[in-house]
Amino acid sequence: MSTVPIPTPIPTPSARALIAEAHAQAEAAARAAAVTIRELTEPSDLGAVAEVFTRIWALEPGQSLMPTGLMRVMAYEGCYIAGVFDDKNGDRLVGAATGFLASDVEPCGGIHLHSHITGMLPEADGRHAGFAVKLHQRAWALSRGLRRITWTFDPLVRANAYFNMAKLGADATAYLVDFYGDMPDGVNAGQGSDRLLMSWALDSARADAAANGTRNEPENEESLLSANQVLLSGIAPGMMPDPAPPSDFGGPLLCATPAAIQDLRREAPELARRWRFALRGALTEALGRGYRITGFTRSGWYLLEQDLDQDLDQGLERDEENERR
Image 1 (cartoon, rainbow, N blue to C red):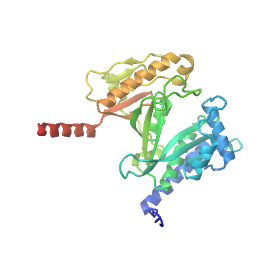
Image 2: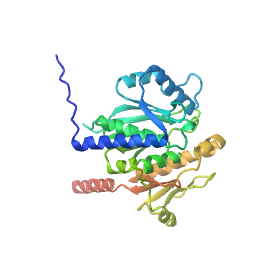
Image 3: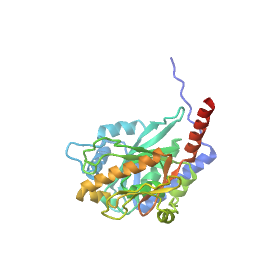
Image 4: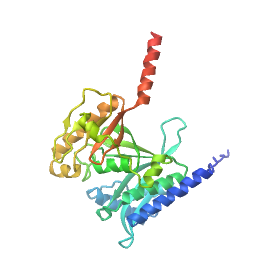
C-alpha cells in the first residue's frame, strides 16, 4: 500500500515577503549583539550545548537538562537546536536554544514550535543576544510554515516577564501551577516551578513591530496605582508580598513582582517562597474571575484586564440557561 505524500503549501508572495523580512530582522539583531546563531546537528556541537546548559543552571555532576543523544534525534527529525557564538571571542559558544514541534490542542489546529530551553552564559550579558535568538526562532519557524511559538517562564522573574511581553509582544495564555514539579537544579531547587505559558503570533503586526524594536508597554500604570487598583503590592527591594485585592474587580489591575528574585532565592529563600505563593494566589484568582494578563511594566507590575470575549460567552451561557428554565 503506497502512501500519498502531503504537498507542502507554496508560500504566497506576502508570506515570502514576511519570511524575508523576518530573516533580515534576525540577522540585524545578531549583528547588533555581536553573535552568530546557527543550527547544530553534530554530536560534538550538541555536547557543547549540554555543557552550556549545565553551567547556566548549576547542575550537579551526572545531571542534564538536555542529553546529547536526545538533542541529536531532535535535530535529525527537524526540531530546533541552535547555538549562539560570540563574534568578539573566537566564535565561542555562549548560549543555546532548543525547541520541538508541538501539536495545537484545537481540532485541525496545526503545528507550532515550542521553545523548551534557552540560556545564555554571563559572557553574553547586556548584549541582547536573547532577543537575537528569539528573532532567529521566528524566522526559522515562519520559513517552515509555522505561525506560532510557545514557551514557559517563571512569572517571578521580572526581566523575563518584561522581555516576553513588552519586548517581544507575546501573550500570556495560562498560569501553570508547579508545572515541572521539583526541579533539583541550582536555580529552582526548593522554590516550586510555577510557569506562565506564552504564545507568540509570529505573523502579527505586534510581533513585526517588536522585531523592529518597538516596545509594547502599558501606559496606565500611574493611574491604576493612584486608584489603588492593585492585586498584590511589595514592589520595592526586600519587601514582603502584600495581598490587597481591590473591592471592585471591574477594571484593569496591577500585580507586583519581587525585585531581584534570583538574589532572594540565594539570600532569603523563605521570602522568595512567600512571593511564589502570593503571586500564584493573586494571578490565579484574577484569571479565575475572567481576567487576562495583557502586559508588564518596566518597573515590575503585571497588567491584567478583563477578557471581554469570555464575559460575553459566560453571558450567553447564562441567557441560554435562563431560556431552558
